[in-house]
Length: 261
Ligand code: SF4
Image (cartoon, rainbow, N blue to C red; front, side, top):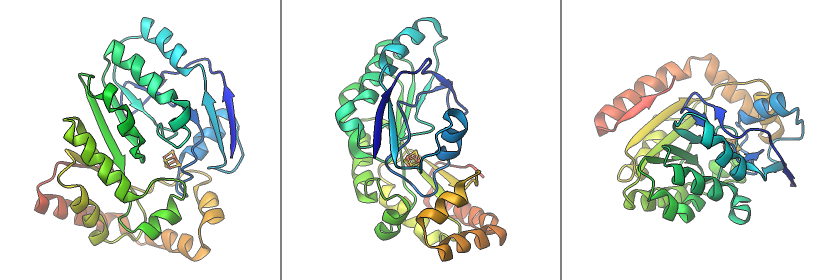
């Protein structure tokens, strides 16, 4: 794993999810086979190394944020759009933690989305913010498949238990079920909902949004038969069918939900 410190010129980026986004790192050692961040990272920074093999630490991010928050309009901040703010390196580097400390001082709303239970380390900061939401991405309850698709990320069980812990602190939570890999059965999606039902305020469901280089990355990491299966399922109208099934499931269970496709 290539790890390097860098200095960046700006830290509050634009976002479609909130007013701003912050990516404390470039790259992500969770190394998900379906990650679309590779495409944007390649386009923005020109990095061509295989996804999951490098992490650049934005070492001036906390100081820069403090400077930018002084003159930018207050707004909500999403952590993070192109990396996981709680990937393993955060355990020792604490860049995300320092960023949260600054956000808490200014008390701007924050939305954190991660696959890691490490976020619970920062409950002392999160619990004193007046507007905070923490979400976990979970794409399967099948640990073998999870390990295959997200080899560097924590187990689904660890995420569920962290979600419970966050909810117990009285913090608003969500579960992001996405990308739903083509061909995933509704019973597998139902299983994720069942595991998290007591601890989630809201569910998001999203499809696999194919970006440039996505198939290329998957073909490097997954058996070609599985990648072919995904392509076939997409072509067969899988997402139209599963969307209807998700709507029925959500109504049956009475959950608050947003389908993003
Ligand atoms: S955790 Fe998120 S950013 Fe990191 S590799 Fe997986 S999908 Fe990409």
